[in-house]
Structure formats: structure tokens, C-alpha cells
Image 1 (cartoon, one colour):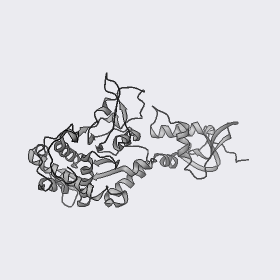
Image 2 (cartoon, rainbow, N blue to C red):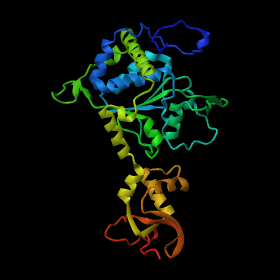
Image 3 (tube, helix red, strand yellow):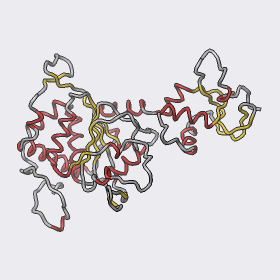
Length: 362
């Protein structure tokens, strides 16, 4: 019982179909090994949030709708942490396939989705390392939210409806990309920065720490798993007692900075405008030309944006208006007044008349 940390006997009314082989000694079981490890890889302030977040994750609740990114160098301790987590919770943790959250969602309707089916009943879903393809934010939110059922299908099986209720954790060296214009996604994202590095000969007064070459085997031992499970249960109890996880503005400063930097770096549209466009009320640009340039910028070639999706982004630009009768190349076209693409060769606009109109509005 994760509200109190009390171990209760199995009963069919609990409708539990999974179990962990880790021996549970109660919430007061000391965890010096875990405490020492956590303070080696993170600050005390971040450890508090991390413990409560993972404690929330093992409950199977989804009302926080959060998803976690653990980001840091190869020897920063993040992979060891998720290995400790997986070892302690057993079948309640699964490995999340990249197809669950990466890609543009171009799969044909009715296609098999075994990567989603494996998440059924999981409380923690972990994916280690990502590639440069952007995230499918809609899938990620569906996995984390538990809002409604998802129709999934295993290979050579009939479709079934499942309700996801797991905490997705992405463990990566490089932060993934997705559209940060989605404010709902940002509010639920938590980045835990792992800034320390474990090496054989750490230098003084740096973020380097002494590596334990035997740690990978130690965390599989019964004692490490018992301590980790007790540590997680205390996190669950803290979450129940508090009633919620901390809001963004209440997070430790290092976590706030990591999220702010991520938002700024992944504001793809505003970065595109700053790098490739000029705002000028005397100029104009064809809708398709501007839209295709943005798609090329973000690497979205497999599934082009629909026009209305692009219009929503453009509406946020001050001084830029959508017009159905803009004269471009001596013909009336739909376009945007007040913006045009920077020429590839800055010394001349020659060859780019299709993307701009030098005439002022009549």
C-alpha cells in the first residue's frame, strides 16, 4: 500500500497481474547505498524531486501526466540510476521502443503497433538514447496521461484497447527535439540534468567523480534492490502526502535552467524566422515557399505540415498578415505580407523574386 508503505497480502480484489521479486522490508528500511549514490550523481535539491517523481511513477497513477528526460554525458550516472530502478521494480518497468515516441507518425492506419502494446500494465517505461528525429509529442502525451484508451495491435493479432498509465523516462546524452509551441507538453516535461562525470582519475575542483567499475554488478544484488525499493516507496508516500509533484516554478534552479534552455533551443519556428527570414512591411512571401523553407529547416520531409498548422505558427508574428491577393511574380497569390526569406547570396536578391515582392501595398 504505497500511501502508507505498509505491505498487505495479495488478494484477487486488488486486480494485480504483476509482481516484483525484490524483497520489501518496509518504508523505514535504511538505504545508505542508495542515498550515497544519489548524492554522488545529483544535488540534494534535485534528489528530493527525483525521489518523489519516481515514487509517483511506481504508483501507476497518471494524473500528473508528466514525462521525464534524464540528460547527461555517457558516464554521468543516469544509466546506472535507471538500471537500479528497473532492477527494483521488476515487471512493473519495461523498455520503451523508440517507435513509441520518435518519428512523424507516418504509419498507415490499422498497422501493427507492438511497441505500444508492450506498455500495457507498465508503471515505468524507459528508453535509453535517442536519434535526431523529432519526437511525436501526441504519442508521448498519450502514454503519460492515461486519458482514454488507445487502440493498439500486436503482430498478427486483433486490435485491442489499452489505457496507458506509465511514467515515460528518456535517458539520453543529447536532448531530443519536438515542437515547444505545445505549451501543454512543456508544462509536463521534467529535465533532470546529470552534470557530473565518473572517471578513473578525477581532477580536483571539477564535476568529475571517482568511477566504481563494479557498480553495474552491485546494483543487481538483493541488498541494493531492497534499499532501492524502500527508497522508491518513501518517494510514493511523499507524493501522496504532498498531493502533487512540484510545479515548474517550484523546481530546483538547475532544473528550471535546463528546461528554459531546452525551450529556447527548440523553439524551431522563432529560430527559423531569426535565421532565415527578414521582417519588412514592404515585402511579401508566397505561403508554399515559406512553408517549404520551414519544413526543410526542421527536417520534416516525410510528412509535410498542413497549411492550417503552419498558419497557427505564423499568427504569432507581429506585423505579418495573411492575404489572398498578393502580387508575386506579376500574379495574385496567397501569401504573407511583412516577411520574406533571406536570399542565399546576401549581396543580391536576384533569383528570389518568387519569394518576395518589392512593391509597397497599394
